[in-house]
Length: 493
Image 1 (cartoon, rainbow, N blue to C red):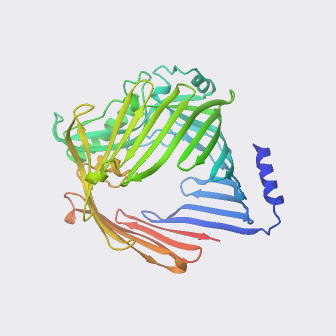
Image 2: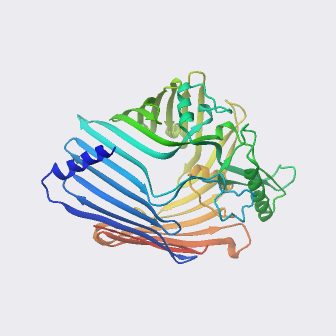
Image 3: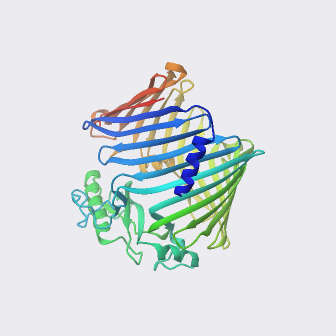
């Protein structure tokens, strides 16, 4: 790896006679509320000519200090491209840590790290990659080498069983090379009910983990279970809930984690739009081995706004893995529904998945919902989780109001963590326009509401602004009444 980077550096300095120029950037974030601190700062400095750039980036964070140092290069010479980067950790690195204490008390975390923490002492080299590419006759070919030191590999339940055995012999090499292992659930969704019989649901909330699972996979470890019970009991009192439910882990949620001291990955890819082919090999110190190959058809739209995509996968473990065909907005042509259908074929079965975010009326009214299935082929009803009313005021100015009937389900659909506490609704207004040097400023104001307990139900009021002051320099801030106030800037040259 060291020789590869040395050769690339020689190519950069010796392969071109153009004069070098200096480039760089300075990004920072300063939190004023709830406390004054310089929470994030990043410096990038680079040397560039017409084809290649050699750069270094230093990252500092308030609570951890000097956290990352990047050394990289990128550029293109005719049809050839080259990119690479190495990451150094100046301080200690936590690879994995659970959020609970040995006593299970979420309100009083210990001063010392928990026993289930995976940690390496710094300064230490962490990872690097080098990517070579060539474009010929509209087809892109690339080869990427990645190297990781002290790395955590993650696998689904199907790759390892309850006893860490595997029907795939090639997976045994990961076990042989591992320093430690653990089975986790990334997060737990707790349900709160208005009655002890658990018939009237008040709210569902996600608690981020990971949460370690017992060796027999029947439940969480005692410390994780105690933490979840304590947290749920405290939250139930806040909500006025008579009961709560912490679901047992299911095999579909399990993540098998292996801490390996050394890992390399090699990726060969070919891209000729709309098709893409990729083959992956890896090595944990036991020799290079084929992992998987995929053939993909990127989403195309033959007509009527309906998108079609496909993916074919092969792995060393199972040979033919699956064929997946995805239809996006399958019913838009007749009903205007945002309804996606995914057909997945495996060697043993076929599955049909329906993703239904809802439907849109004019003017903009979005209903966020999904069907409720009685069995695999029968829809018994429609669960409506919330709605959005929006209005476009210009090219990039708008106003919208979002109301959630089920906060967790709505956040799952939108893929965002939006609400806090008892909030269920927010109003947002966005404005933008021309600023300095041909760039655009963006302003957003918002108000969050709860059902009761505050003036007009308002919980938070805030605003965000991003504004370019002059070429190469932009300024921004974020404020809300939680309280929070911070400002950022980016200076580039």
